[in-house]
Image 1: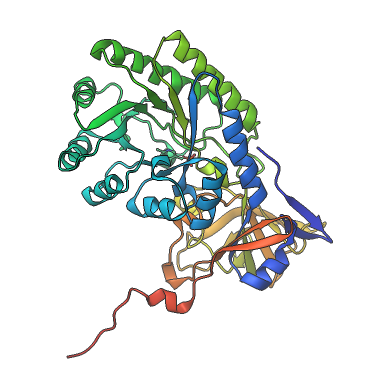
Image 2: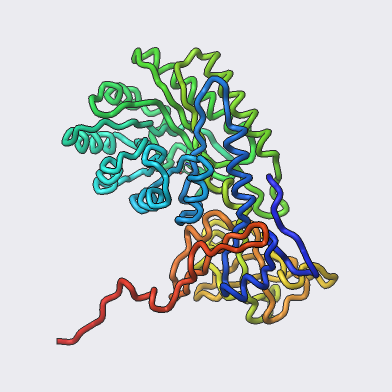
Length: 434
Ligand SMILES: *Cc1c(COP(=O)(O)O)cnc(C)c1O
């Protein structure tokens, strides 16, 4: 993992050289704060280390992890590709300045409307999930004069050791076609014969929060061996391959840390060698980091409203957000650490439970947090919330969505305004009695 630009000045947390207390004064709470330099450094780390003399490499940001004009604009400038899983994400990527050829379109049930939108906008690549989708794309293309590059998503049956909601390659997974499926070869054959679809090769994504390079090597072995088998069986040359994302991040202090640059170098080296050993015609290799691009850079700031001592269990620290701005702890038990931004150090650490303000008993952000004497009015910072928190946020209880601010070198840039009350009803129509 790369270093964050965190520092404590007079016991107050500063991110990117900006005081978190100044930030909440200006933008309110809850507030998502992003360490902009860390994101830039991470993008450079991916691009510079996942690089080869013999292959074209593509770092494709999985935009579902965090998608707004600001972050997409920043990554477009850094030179990444982007992966979109809906018409909305394609729309945002285009608006943010990604060239259509650098946008890849994913999803297990892309609608006809979405596919037509992707084709109309000359999206660079579609990753096909299933046979019905293949036929649907063919139908759409037969009515136009266009052709489109595609990969086929394969489920390589690699079992990773993460939560089942973020595993994607079990035999019952909804994503892709299982590598052991008897119909697979015939489907590929039909695709290689298509007049309008150019099948470049295969894609797989083994899951999320995978920390061990071993799983990715296993995935590479399986997918490259499979590519070789298909080349021989169908007398067809595949030109591209994509190993998905899922590179683990350090969410709390008990998670392992690893050297991202070294990891990427070793991975691309392994891929290069395997492609050579199998004597494949693959020219382009892609990976799709989402979480690992943005997670460590994000911190959520909340204001503490009350410390409540219940009859049993840990004392509760109430904050002014919760599952509406970060559903991951309730959804799949994600674990975070917190600190008090205005009293970052001290001697009076005790264990507390951090609870949100939403009307659900399960609205707990941290089960057990070591905090230094929290008081009403304090600012509580939860680190490593950059991925899949804002992206999965909701308006439950009509919570106003927090602002998003990027900080670097002492300067704060507002990326998303805090939602206003009037925004809650922009699409609502009034009841009129007749
Ligand atoms: C979610 C997803 C990614 C990104 O996963 P991370 O864990 O965020 O890196 C990449 N590719 C595909 C196909 C995905 O569904």
